[in-house]
Length: 588
Image 1 (cartoon, one colour):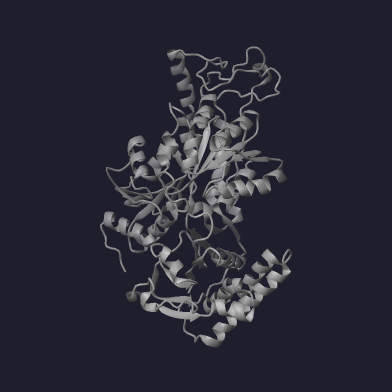
Image 2 (cartoon, rainbow, N blue to C red):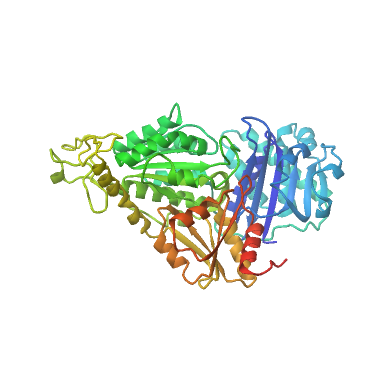
């Protein structure tokens, strides 16, 4: 086989995520492509967790629809994931034989004809190694030998993590891997159908989306970050708290979300590139300050790692339902930009683009990430990360513009005014959240408000014309176009490839820039298309409704496929929607 999809499920203390991390990193060391989606409950501590890993010799765009091999430490814990982890027919199911749940009672349908294999994970770790917690490493050995995963690379990953600081832990874990591998050799016959027979290329990097975004912000020159902990955005705060001081930056954990936004605005006004991040509930609390950044024309990058809502929703699950919040949040007509990363590499690139647009046009820029793209681990191509460099610069006043006549909000053709920073001689000016004239003096004139609203809005058409923000995959002469955004790209792109193999002329159109609408680029992408399908993870079809309201270039026959979040889109459901609107049945 050229690829395998496997899943591990257990309790929060079983080391499920750690085992998945080791498999992903070892595959990357061998030059293979890997993709890991972790899942856990909303509780602060304990509970159940799962890791879903896809390893392939070819590029991977989604988590894979069905699981070839499932490993279960506890059937009770696995019940939590029955709507997320579906095994394919004839899948191999490894379970800890210490769990005495009758097989006829396990939550896997009999029609799947799964092959169940009881493995003494806990007993081997306890009796042979005297370390019960090492059962996840025993599992790694079992999987490595069973599926032909790179066992030497697994051991290298263990040594990298434990070797220097905890050599005794590294030794025990490597013994556990060997123990699991030996158990397979002595107890299981040949003929497991899911052996990975794939050659890799050059070693690859592995990153989560949150880490890639934080890394991209550092590359873009961020010097100040303020945030408040919230799932699933907290890893950005943690990464930058650890790394940003090494690059001359500062990180502040504030007392609340509004303070985080306000501090970032203050840092930006003082001349630093600044960012804050949260998730839906926290973004709601930041809105007043984001409106201040729009009115005062201060560059600001705001990251929203979306989760399932409304209210507290499902903190550990994904959804694409904060689009309206990003586009229309804050009171009044507050200009802003909305960008959306679609995979881990995109998180890095979009962070750079966000600072480019924020600094160039002096306004807030939202990055609409989500839990699926932010918390998954994925192999990335270093060359792709740095493929789109940007010259990031703020428009500063010339010496001639400074002095008594300096107008911070000078009316310009492009709406962007020279922005003095503290300490710049002759750059003193008034600034507040009140409407103001060119010098920043507050005013309650309706006539002036019209003039300044027009000034701020003049930036948006120019942003919409910025190049490189619409990606196209598939047939140039497609009859059907699938429009998607953010993390839906993976399932859509893979579904489009499958549809093309079945003879359908179809392509995917995935904009990184959501607001303002990149109308000219979308017009070009939709040229010749007869029908369109808008795919998204939003119960109310926000992207479809947004395009209908803000973009008049959609084909007359434009349809919507939308559902609530919680679980990411699957390739087969998108393919079925494509076939329905293309007029063909999906081949088995």
